[in-house]
Length: 305
Image (tube, rainbow, N blue to C red):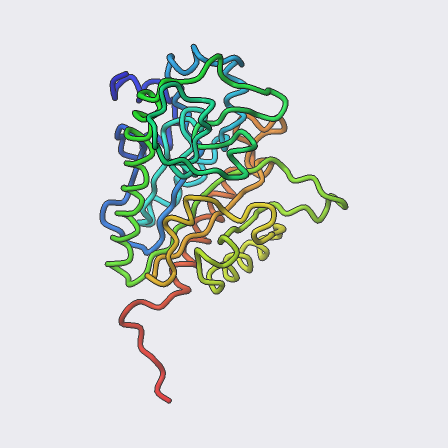
């Protein structure tokens, strides 16, 4: 599959396609940061290689249940404000960029080299490792295990360069401003709680305080609640591998996961874009600006005692 084939296969909405530069593993904007804020969208990719679909036991509509459906459209307004943006092209069914590259179910692999380091996790045991295996209501997704050479190529072609690019973006922002703030954007199905009117519509995750300053999480929650939306912190989504890898507060690199209820921007079927898109685009622009302003620049003048 050539890079041109990948560009054609993905079918990003026109506003995203025109605003972002193409490369083999993702789309990116903002080479010279005008802001300390970096945005990552790892689960909105819609590239499904023909070879992957041929090995699927389920129709493509089931594989698409793994996507953070169209959440990438929400970041288009951020690009014009100088924020660095990275959006995955690969579908989550192909590889999950929010998992450690060792989070592999050995039952999914043929000819796994002896001594290959693997890592167990609750997500992996639930079927949602680096290479998703099962979905609720769909059982096994694949007809047979994959060759190790194919899976290793996915890591090399998609996982490694995505995270290397994201790390470079974070370092550029920190070098320019003295600190970097990553917003790792995801979407979630509407949460079911009792009573339903208290269900959070946006969940902020900082790995229970490990990946970002509490000051930034508090500012984000305050701003979102000011728009009349219900916010939760770390429950039920505290964040996963991506913010754990790139959020290093001791190095002035902060990372928070932002989960958005899909009913806020999709239609009633949670499939196509709905009337709430523009409001959420504006909210994310405001959120990024508020977080950027929350932290002082390196030459911030300290008040005299």
